[in-house]
Image (tube, rainbow, N blue to C red; front, side):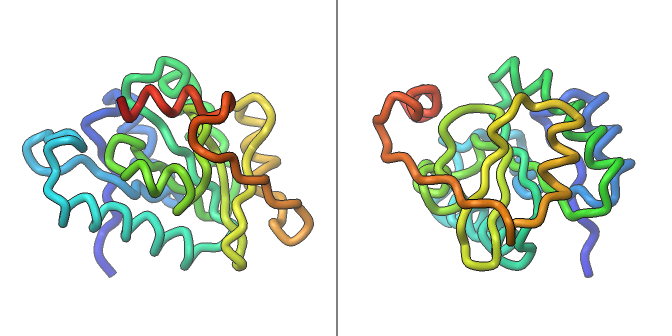
Length: 172
């Protein structure tokens, strides 16, 4: 088994140092060599990132995934809450940089991401469950600990709906 990537150039050094200390958190979208952004990745690199995220989601049903955008100040504020929550639960959790994922992955492949930060998990049937509450350490712990067997999946939104408008900015 290879070592899990734990550092991302888009996270603060403090967040990177904290992530390394939490063994149940996987970094799904480490930054590519040379600090390239998503727009400069080759089609093969983009597909590899998307495939890695989906393999993780499919092989870890119920794992809580924190999707962030590096330019989003709310994400920077919520990341410490996610890391603190991850240290309190034994469940598998993951962090994904939205800039390293394709629009099709974020708009339906993994989840129907409508805003950043976005916290979700997929059950064994591929249904997505979304943290609807404010992103606090306590709400993340409760969400991560809740079985997806009892939670109702979140209805998907189509691109362009008002709730998806904050994600639209990421792909313009």
